[in-house]
Image 1 (tube, rainbow, N blue to C red):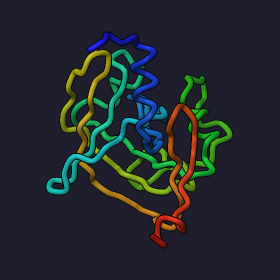
Image 2 (cartoon, rainbow, N blue to C red):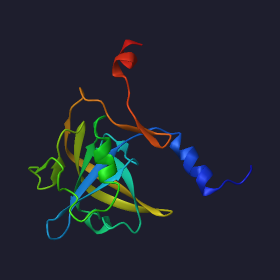
Image 3 (cartoon, helix red, strand yellow):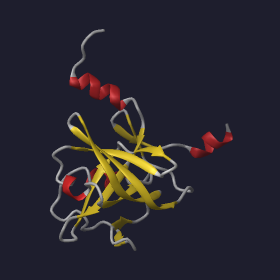
Length: 166
């Protein structure tokens, strides 16, 4: 097998379509933070577990450690701007973003497809990232909304009417 470059690997990974999520959490002073993640995946129904990954040296790592809670937002097809907004670090990330404080005390962004309130149960090292395994504590789902998809390094949508008719 021929060796590959990191750029070739990145392009290969881009051929796998993923949903787009924003993770929100709170720091020790109860300030909200968020980040765009496309590495979200299901692990188990019993117990209800999910996983996602975060760069080892991310500013969010201290606030998503074992025992800490966070909120995963599955973005809606029209929320591309929101995905890009949380993909970069900003001083006041939530300025101009429609959001509220959920009953859990976590920051909840409005109009998403689904929300998973989670508690981190384990963190595993995986190369230059940490793999976060979290238990789903609460969820809210809006199946009538179309999710935002990321594939081939761009945002796309799905035509559910076409899928349902087949």
